[in-house]
Length: 390
Image (cartoon, rainbow, N blue to C red; front, side):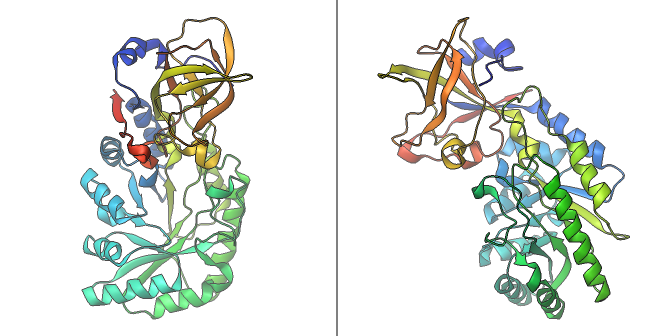
């Protein structure tokens, strides 16, 4: 495991972190701003709209900065809708995804005139039409299509195959499109897709473009034109070398859709990026409680646990772990674990670190996405605070 010094953590903030109560999330706001500016640079001049997926990180300070810099919002709950409104996102640029939207969430979206509901089933479509009719409004929708594309990621973050709960199968799509056009209180704007998360190879996105091209050609033959195409998100990051790759290759990512997706005149192309926007700007700063040695194993026991970063326990996910206070030149091999009373509360096994001792400060990198947003108070643990670097 890479043990290089953390960029901007060890060099500049070692003494500061030693004095602070741990654990806490540390956010590099300059990197966040640079990331969004790069996205804006690459999409300028194209009929593209980039939505930020709030599920990745809904910290109010993070949201306010993202809204200020001009991204739209992608939501999966009524709570996220309220947070987006509070942060300053424009309602008519919001997309509301999710396979199980409750009636109150639909009403809330309609009350605020959100841009689009991404509809995942016929019963949901009929329910949105019913609620909109009772409210005397028209709901703008897109139909989420399950394209049956395997993104070759962890099974828990694959969303675009026929075995997943998300979206409407391609074989059902003509009937659902016809139904949407017949319902009086919905306006069908377009099609929506999302094939998975932490995708680092471009071929699945190329396959998605080919599928969309085929569907558009089919529906054009039926006289159906879509105002918007939403390709979701899913772009992965480099969890092993965050300082080498502070941003994913956005140029290659957007280039795939520019080269392979055949947009029609006047169509808008929407993206829903989450992890790739915020992951690398966040670190979880924690302190070593104990170094424990068993017969054939050494454990570094941290004051942060799976309640603060559940991804390793849930997905077997890898995060770079760095000792940012050790002065040792020699290293050793440890299992890095948390204090939660669960055997799955493990951040890494057989992790090579500088000789580590009680009181050392540890950084778990790339936690800006699905770190704070998935934190819990299990074991009645206190939720960590947040530090924002300028």
